[in-house]
Length: 199
Image (cartoon, rainbow, N blue to C red; front, side):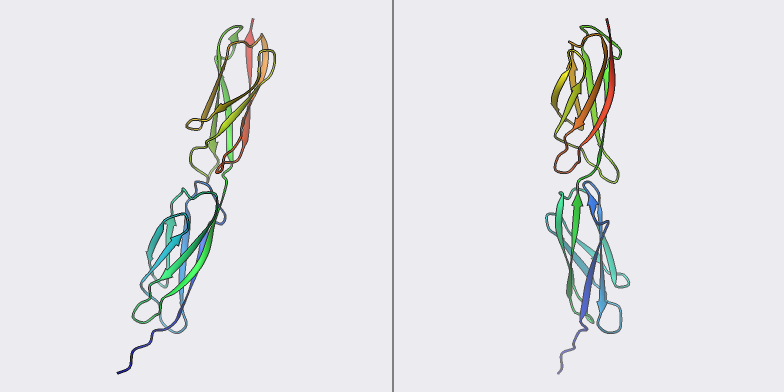
């Protein structure tokens, strides 16, 4: 009795988008090509280094899965293992997900504005990712407050927001710059505002 032989296959992997930004989901597609006639069926298991293991079912020889947002910045190897079926032999393909830091935007406001000499003024910086990036930036914001009574102050971010309160600003118009210093997933950015202090 002879053992039936299976047709060899080749598995190709594509990654979209490439590169991806931090906080962006990624689509992995596997195409199983037979070295013969017919259309392979079965499943493909994607193993992502530093990420999840996902399984997709072939339709027309291809399958796609979505890697959810959350991969760290850097390169993540992808191994796609085709399971094979009664006609087609298993095979594997490799790819890579490249994740780069997300751009951000920083806005700064003050309250109350205008204020009076001796009154406490709170400066608030909000740091948000620019699409398609997502998530909550961490790290610090450096506030540069011009004029007498100002200075340079480094404040921590919490929930994407940093605050600074000052009560010793002299009368006049004070330029305020908030510089987000970035972290491993998000790039630096800055915003400006002015604060008017009345006598």
